[in-house]
Image (cartoon, rainbow, N blue to C red):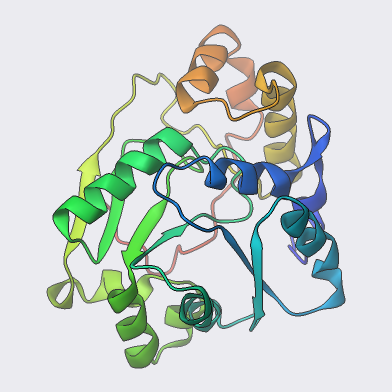
Length: 236
């Protein structure tokens, strides 16, 4: 809710529902997910998203605003789970079907961290084991390792089992942004939801078919620079 580039974006309307409602709905649709937890920061500004999540049957955990790693760890301590599926609150295009496949890859391989390659920005999930989350929490010392969840794991792959697998899609728009960080991102999301949402999650493939027929939509936010995790994310 305190986004600097798009304040209040979590409650922006998409097809008659708040953006965060679509994030929760899509996460609940991932096969293998037992409980969905909205892990947010403390503060009155977040009361609307908390109320929205609770109305949809999601659990809620409030913690540190800046130490996101601690927030995730403490939420895992309260609600349990051998694996944590990380879905960010500004990704209303998170794909439940690809998410289920990523979870299956993580469990079958025994990965400490598992993520797909080849999906458009904003559609994939990141999965890490409870034991890896605990180790990252206990051993992280740098500020950037605490501002997000998985930097410590990615910076110390010699200590963890990291699995990245290919989930390629036929896409003519390699710079396609399906996340909401700016007003232009929201315009894209609004257009796509207006065209595709029919009361339940639509797939990334549905989006790509629409974009192929309406390529001008992908141009709206093509110049937006992705800022999150830029300081440490390893290039694949």
